[in-house]
Image (cartoon, rainbow, N blue to C red; front, side, top):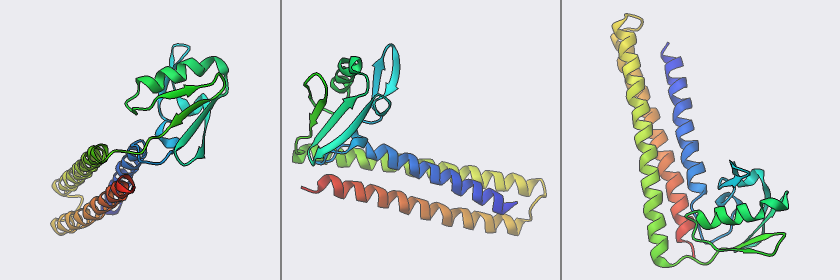
Length: 185
């Protein structure tokens, strides 16, 4: 009973960490990365569609992204979506390919991005703590229904806390890695 609860809680905490990782991938560093724009929503014939479903995204140079739409009629829509996004990048359209030059980050912008990373990591920590709270509540309910003993409840609480500490440490490591990537000149 407790093993299933721990396994389910661990699985849900892993998903919170995966969400954090995929969220941080979209934060710009000084280098070009397809992940920067692949989840960008483009209004394609009235339907919001992720950019990676409309075009191939290549990195020909460390500070350049090349976006080649599969359907040339979507070029203007992709360009408009990039301009509307909060990336702060200006697309260069030559009629077939959109090029995005990734300028080096200013020190001020790096500090803002580090704060944003810290905020996202804290949100992940809160999500993990909420999952811990839910798991402990479930364990208490099991104990109230006499499905587990009081000793099992205390053991479960300790194991859930250890799992939570491990997951929060991993979230911190993910955040620290992204911060180092941003601060790298």
